[in-house]
Image 1 (cartoon, one colour):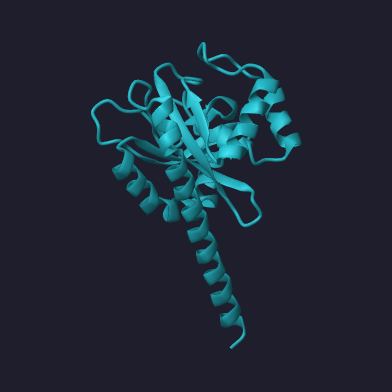
Image 2 (cartoon, rainbow, N blue to C red):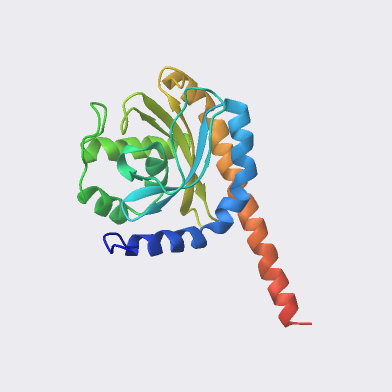
Length: 207
């Protein structure tokens, strides 16, 4: 009415992002809810969008004290567990481009050295999951694993996040393998579904 506010290009970009990853959300949902029941912390599904990770889906923790997260929320990839889980499996040139865009300090635990972060990503590849200990937000820890396609490319990440006093480093190392296994099952479900769609399409065109 007043003309003071109007919808911007970012809304179109978010809508496209949502449509593009709709299949991932659909197949990941049941696994995310199961992971939430198992660990009783907030579970998020994220994808990389330029230099940030964006939440596609959130399953809230049933506990009173929990991570405040919402669909569409953006966070810098380099300082989050989800972002590091994805970065670890991207080509080096892509990772360096993202890091060269800037590494802002968010807390006293934020990794600001490219060399230190690259070493951290090497550890992620070795153990199969990433850990963030208050690197983006004070008092919040997270453990995440990448959802890899058949070519080993990270199409998303699954994260378990919660208060640092409850989600300790020891606990994250303990539950990391279950997050990795959940991501693997989601990837498998997506590949099976897409294979089925391809076969159906082929049969429809070749009676």
